[in-house]
Image 1 (cartoon, rainbow, N blue to C red):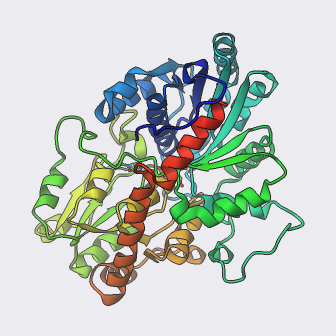
Image 2 (image 1 turned 120 degrees about the horizontal axis):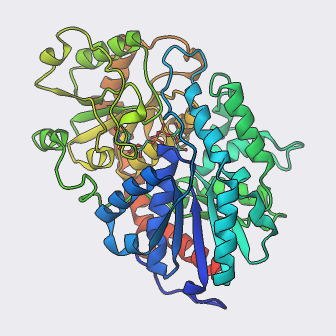
Image 3 (image 1 turned 135 degrees about the horizontal axis):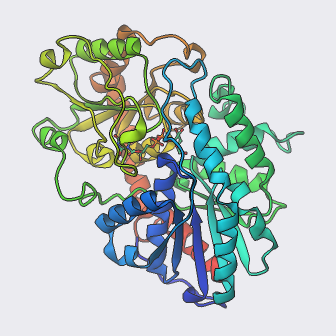
Length: 472
Ligand SMILES: O=c1ccn([C@@H]2O[C@H](COP(=O)(O)OP(=O)(O)O[C@H]3O[C@H](CO)[C@@H](O)[C@H](O)[C@H]3O)[C@@H](O)[C@H]2O)c(=O)[nH]1
């Protein structure tokens, strides 16, 4: 995304420093990295905070997208205490991977170093703009007392889902909602979080209020109504809202760093729209029993598929380490499906897969990155939410945007999803008139969303007005 003409007011871009404070977790880090990548084209220097290992990997990824930007992003290796990268616990009755807790604990240690960095920058720049993850409010607390610094919260999920959380906490309700609204279908938080994570999230919420604005990795094309509702809710707070997404790079040619993954070569040989991509993000895993049902469901559906089978996210692009346990697939499965299915056991090039013309559907846990990536590529979703805000994102996909089918109802989250259900949903999505209708809608939504980040599009204009605001 290149900058468009916009009126510079008082400050020159180089007089404003932007500091990015991500939560050190794959699904969050990458969004702020994508955002960081856009800022240098407006002339503002960016200071990006991470651990040495995260920053090294981030530099590699940036290099693949746009070397000009990467040269203008200053990476600060802050002393993040080492923590064990989260391993989801498949037998945990609460669906949130309990081992994410160390990431939250570790992030708390960033408060002092972040303060020192901002303080130092504030003596050199006329304004310091701190953009931080929505779960890092506690880390930037000290910034509120600095006269030439301001903070912006970066929401790592949709405006629909953000609004749903904020609305729950508002009493009395300041205005009525439409009865037919998809928001009414949102399930409760039961089973979404461990008590510790819920408490961490609630504490972060309590520390909001001194920020100057909220940024969203979404587009008004799909989330405009909820951005408006959020604006209505915060009308007295002078908080500004900017929907600048989707931030995932739509041009993905260089992201796989040199070599093309074998699954892309395989996709080249398949028919247009014939393959369903099955992958559940970076923080989920399944019981062996569930893996067996999924394998049988895919086999019985007779559809083509790519299935990413990983136990956990330690084999991710940031840490580069390998995984602990390889899940067992039913005996003979890979041999039986070898002509129409491919199992990937390592980190898959998801964006490139979703962008491939042979991919016609995505079975997803509805992490927001996966949703927005799929939406921008016009790919329909079989929604299988697992934890956190995913059940809400699933409602957005299936009932608000109507570009997917719900595969597992949150009410039945403790039950193993049968191969019959999986077969049924995959077939409906990939090979029925119903699926065709959903696919048509998803293609239209995808076109509109991509146009929103192109020159003159609504997200590009939001980005321009954000830059204009912070250089006022
Ligand atoms: O083999 C893989 C697996 C994942 N990804 C990428 O990793 C990201 C995964 O993000 P997401 O789909 O959001 O899933 P999680 O990693 O589970 O994300 C966490 O963070 C999200 C953003 O806050 C939340 O929406 C989720 O609920 C939370 O689990 C996406 O960009 C994928 O493209 C790959 O490229 N290859």
